[in-house]
Length: 92
Image 1 (cartoon, one colour):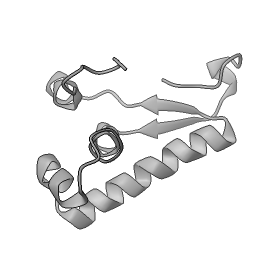
Image 2 (cartoon, helix red, strand yellow):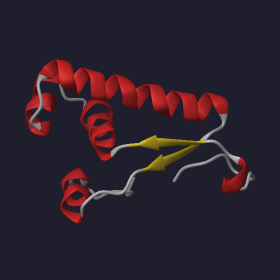
Image 3 (tube, one colour):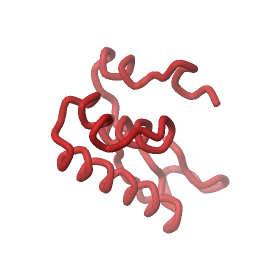
């Protein structure tokens, strides 16, 4: 979960970000892949990938602008492994 500093989580609205949305953000904004290549990697159509990415970006922007907590939804362990990049999840 990512949240504004200094405000208890219990006092914040929470926005849920799915693992598919997190992966779409990673492919587009971290790896800078074209949408068609990213869609192939996610095994979805390009229009579906575009909808997932638009939703993810909207949620992240809303969380930042409105001061909400951004909660990344848990999935199966194998889904989390697929999200990791060469440097690993959470390693900048």
